[in-house]
Image (cartoon, rainbow, N blue to C red; front, side):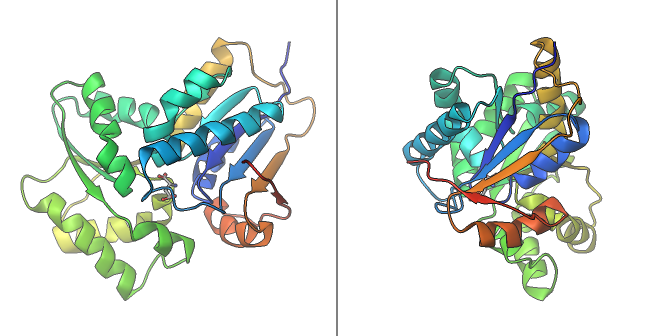
Length: 272
Ligand code: DGL
């Protein structure tokens, strides 16, 4: 029997919409509720306990709204909040770090992989742990890119300032032996994909595969729904509900860029 309850996704703001886009592509029959914690963004520079608390309260809000599964569509919240959310919420939970880490580890089990992320995600070591759990001989370098989030939110995806910031963050990754692949360990970074690719080519002569978490997370979610008999059947048109903890208007404005299409309606929600 089809399960027509929605899937809940959350992020610190609009970045997780890059994950929602991938989920919608792979699971077009599923109803989705997306919650952007725009009142408290950014998560990337906050402490582990704070992010853990935010993650649990948001997951609980989504559970109360009748969700059948939760996607933590934020790397920082996945790094610091996954364990607590799994322990305190009685729903299946998918994060954005495990799925991409497992896929990349399978591709380069003895290679060198570079991870770009927020300060929090890098400090947590969550990617290093997940990659090494799947491939003990993999080498991992990491680079925190705190300026990428405001650049992406402001729509500065190109231009001299962005090019210089990207070049500066990528440079340390090429100080020693160059990586075989790059992981975009933050859901905001896919907006800077072209700038990153261009800098790799122009500044470092590198044409590396770049992996982002959205498609891998969506594939893991589909497997989980199939394995637990939680799939919807498409008998009614799938709906996406957008919730924001700050003004819905600003969520709609910047969210449209991350989603790749306008967001017509978003509601305000309190999660305290
Ligand atoms: N989207 C968040 C992530 O994937 C980063 C944005 C923030 O710092 O809140 O980590």
